[in-house]
Length: 532
View 1 (cartoon, helix red, strand yellow):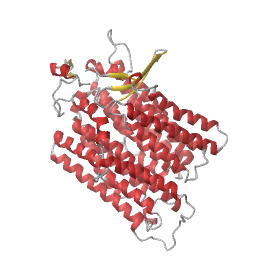
View 2 (tube, rainbow, N blue to C red):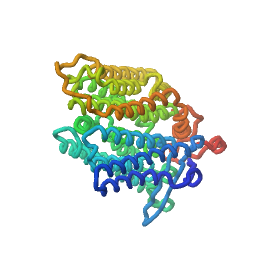
View 3 (cartoon, one colour):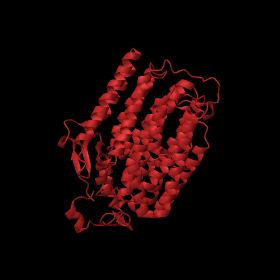
View 4 (cartoon, rainbow, N blue to C red):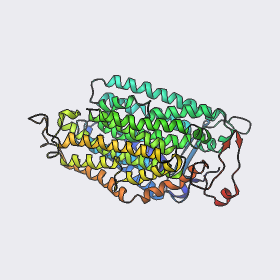
């Protein structure tokens, strides 16, 4: 099926996506060459602020009414190709990255890393990597960005982590991530080399690969390699072991941006697996849904058992990942829309809880729940931030997660029936249980010590209030008015869903391939002109 491709010159005044990638990169270089921490901080805020403004401009010029790839930029040199673009699957992740990077820098003003140039440079470098990966329309280009992501994550963990075994944590991280990257690389190579013949020269361009995927061989092997590679990245049970240890011993500021990086796994499934090997994805859907269900309940049960709040939030992410994966494998518009919007909502809400926990740590120097308690009176702002973020994660009405979860559950009912939907709702109740229990132990319970080990008299309260107001306004504002955000997603989610005629709610189309045979679009497809 043909995909509408719109160049950047049709709607933007300059190559916007490349500029979005280069601005934080330039700020990172300036920070590394600056001679004072104050100058480095100014460069950091300038780069992050300009990136945020450009991401807002990106939303204004994006044509949400037309499915397809927009703002496409491409170049070819030395046999290599560069192509970037946005559609409904990635358009919201870029502004989310920009918002959380700026808030992470504001958070840094309150911490001991405010004069650390390497720390600030790594935050901007991480922003560059994420924007580049989300915008990439070349599979090898995407893979290289994922490789580069290891650099800021490892540096931030070793240089600014709070644990005693940070190098061991990085070794564990490398073991998992390198395995995932190697599997992903093998899957991408099989995609590209599987199409080589007289009519199809070697290419890693996503558009070319997708439009010719009916000629693929070894689709099952490609699916397995990509699925397991991305499962490590999400992370999905049983590939999750690296996340709790990294969350426990890493730094909160980097973890906030890292939350967006975790969504690369879900995005990659929707971008590279569902369109490329839809037939195999349908065949393996039961296996993937089973892993998703295990992730939901395993993550929730382990979260209830934690005494370290950072590990608790890490297992909460694992539980959430299961729900997102099940939504993606509904193969219908509602499930895909719900999964994408819920990914963004979860990223913002979990960032709010991490900021709250991080600022509590700055005051108490502990993340252990038994050592906390009674913090509401002296830390009301942080309590509000944690509570609003937790309610968003529980998909309460008035938060963006509510409409997203409603769509996701509708998609699950349509595809798998009420039984699976009820199981997911039970998992959400368990999520509410461990988050509200954590809130009660941190802020409401009687303190375990007669003398509190903190003093908030000298902390810059206005910065905390700014972070709290910004995140709460974003959560509540988008929660009460989700229509604009759904408009960004729905056309492309519907186009993906139409590739699965036995599952989607749209008018049926022929799948890209069936039993190795190439299918032709129906007359209705050609007349409608709205398919991918």
